[in-house]
Length: 247
Image (cartoon, rainbow, N blue to C red; front, top):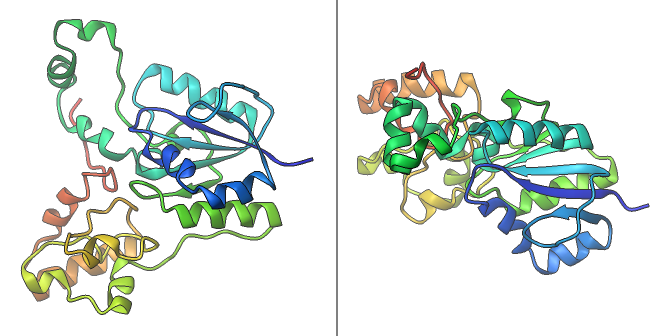
């Protein structure tokens, strides 16, 4: 029998779920090897007999907690897709503000009808078997993961920073232009798409490792006179770095 897969969305823009639908021809090949049994954006049928569940979005509400626990109970393997699911994503920006402030700003007088929680990645609540980071996730990595799981092969994310991909493309380092870029500490795998087109890396794929963070802190301070705290503040955008937050 074909492995049964499902795609779920928690608090997010659902861009990573849409990225799966945008695979087009590749998706047709996948459908020849698997059976999609639960995918709100693509089908009306629902089944909870699931081998692999792909989850898009952060846990940001009590309902998200209930949903991710139900998903985990019905899936043999769970894959976090995208920055929100892997790191908490842009949802975590609310963690730096008092709850009453952002609730009033977003919902006004109706805030009491919309319960909320500190935004966190799904791994804060359930076991996650694989992660596909990025905003959105890299479609090629999604295909590689599906093929690896179906063939019983090992799947691993790149263990190098985005800077390595920039060097291979021959890009001029943005620090030489006076731009603070998170490439030295962010996990590669995106083909350095942002720096290649002139935009700084903003850390949507998460920190590649603690060693890279420490090394970058020393290099940035010594070579460019940039304190690590400045870089860590930028890493907040996609939830790649979480310091002590407001109650």
